[in-house]
Length: 381
Picture (spheres, rainbow, N blue to C red):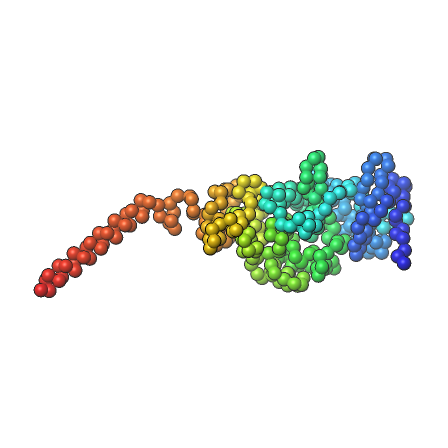
């Protein structure tokens, strides 16, 4: 028989909070729903296991990063009200806003892949939260769909809240089946499915690592699949480092996206940080045009039997020009083959005047050859 949780029904911090129920648990702690009578509100309290109190390095890192989290004020970042140690047993705690809804992973699993018009505004808002953190020198290091919580706020649906800034160093969150997290000093830590190549190699991370992870999240939100096929965590790590991601428009048969959106995501998934977007704001600006007109997937089923993928894309609305700088790497083949369509003359697609000149030249050539043959035949006689 399971023993009752000692925190449920307990008053904490001199009666400021009363724990009502447990709403989540992990390898290093639990999250509780609690009343805060003085403020007439419900809050969430994350309490780490008391055994962590004996680890001075973890306590120091926890305090430093909890302090940083409490300074983040972006509306798309979960609010932290208080943090510290419980006097009774030395357990580390964080008091934060209570969110109701479900995370992005749960949303995609329940509803299926999201349309760009829905997914991109969510990710653009997440970029805003990340930019504030990056400006303060905080790199999330464990961005994944489970850490993007969708709720309703101010009458707005799909309002994302980014969770667990910096806590990857000291906490172990709910992992996907088969995932792992390595938290020893100097080792790789994070979630293999979403970590950047430099993170997978244990290198020093900056904001561009989070941008890579965010691109993987967007890719999965749109396709329902990750940009690599792998079965175990180590395979994901190897593919992040060594293999090119599967192009967005080749991931799901019969489902196509705007070729420029594919190029934006491909740039954010570059192996080298210098080849990605330099900031979360820059990535957001590159994504923003695809949150409305022209962002939907173009189903092949709507084309004539036997029609090619390129034909399906060329029948779509004209490309939206992003305000972001052009990708430093060549665009995917599908994007290159369609950009010139409907844009006037180009080297690959001559205009009417060029074609006419070519035709006239060909006629003169044929006539010239014919006359030459006739003359040679007469002289031969």
